[in-house]
Image (tube, rainbow, N blue to C red; front, side, top):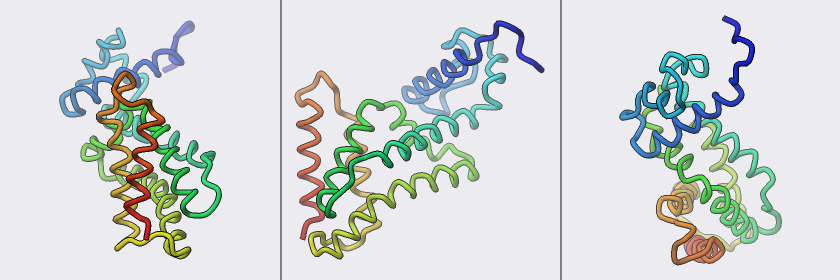
Length: 195
């Protein structure tokens, strides 16, 4: 069915995604209904299906969008130099990207269990591509003799979990500014992998 003239799908679609993101981040995927999302946007529940086929697709779109942004931004990150410099660059990039996006981070990491198997496989593949960036740095650092760890894959996942976790508790008006937090976390990352 064609959308009627004067429709604002370019405005309402993003509003649906923003409302879904906020509600899912606050209450969890299972607790949020399409009716609640519609009320938040100010449309009838049935109107949501003009923008998404179902709640599962909406969750997948939120996660996929986050991962697409992350992967695109990581390709532009300053990851030049030796392994230690690249690890510092990755740490700075990861924190700078994730801190301003606490809702996206929460939904993307905590709601994986609610994805269908097919959707999970897609998101997991994207996550793996991002993890590979860090794992390559760690392997290069081992080859250069500056990093030592029992297993690069486990270390990769542990470091990403630690770096991502700052989004759960950091507040811009708190005790530390972003630069101080980044410096502290870089020290933790460096000490956890250096030989």
